[in-house]
Image (cartoon, rainbow, N blue to C red; front, side):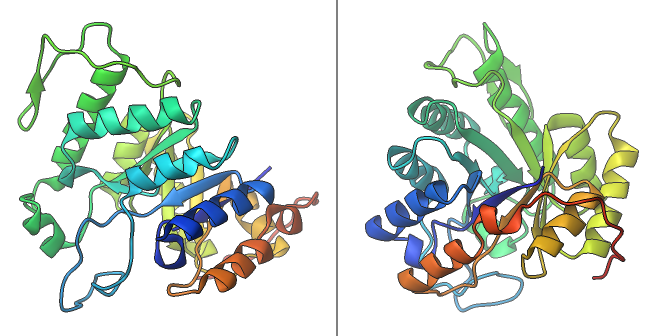
Length: 285
C-alpha cells in the first residue's frame, strides 16, 4: 500500500510557531505517514536560477523544525527531505538528529542529498566539486558514531577516535533515504541507503529512475517520490504500479495558513489511498 507524506511544513505558513504546530498536528490527524522538511541554510540574493526560492522566503532549520514537530505529534514519521549533507558538520548533525530520534520516540527518517546551489555551498565553505564524495564520507562517519560500540573514523574530511556520543538513536539503524536523480545518486542509494527519494517526477521519469536504481541495487529500496502531477486516487494507483512506496505531496509556495490547511485536507490519505485492482497506465512526463 502506498502511503502519503507531506513536504515543506517548515516553510512559508509553516515557518511560524502556530503554523508549524498546526500543520504537524493536522497531518497526523488526517493519517499522513510522514512530514518532510526542506533544507537551505542560505539562498542566493538576488534570486538566481536554479534556486528554488526567493531569498526572502521563510524557511526554518530542518532539525530544529523536526524537534518542534516531534513535541506536537505522537506517531507521524519525521524526515529530512533532504538535508544538504556536505554543508553540515557531520558529528554535530549526528548529535542533533540522534536527539530528534530520541525525543520523538524513534520516528526519524534521515533523508540526505549532495546539494546543487553553488552560492549556498560556497558561502558555507564547501566546494561544489567533490561534494558527492564528501557527502558519502559524512554519511559513513555519522553511521559510525550512531552504530559502532567504539566509534572511530578516518577520512579526507572528517577523522575521529577515542570519542563517543550518547544517547544513541532509538532506531537501530535509523533509516536513510538518498535523494538525487543522477546515476551517482542511484549508486549512493544502492550502496549506502535504505531508500531513495525522487523530486518532482512524472510517471515516465519515475519509471526511468527506478529502472536505473534497480540495475544498480541488488536489494529492495523503499521508494519515495514527490510527483509533478496533482495527487488523485488515479495518480496514487499509477505511481504504486511503478513500485513507489510513498508519495510526498508538495504544497505550492507562499500559501497562507488557511490555504495550507486546505491543501493538507485536500490531499488527506483517506481520500487518495483506496483499495484498487492493478491497472496499466501509460507513463507520461
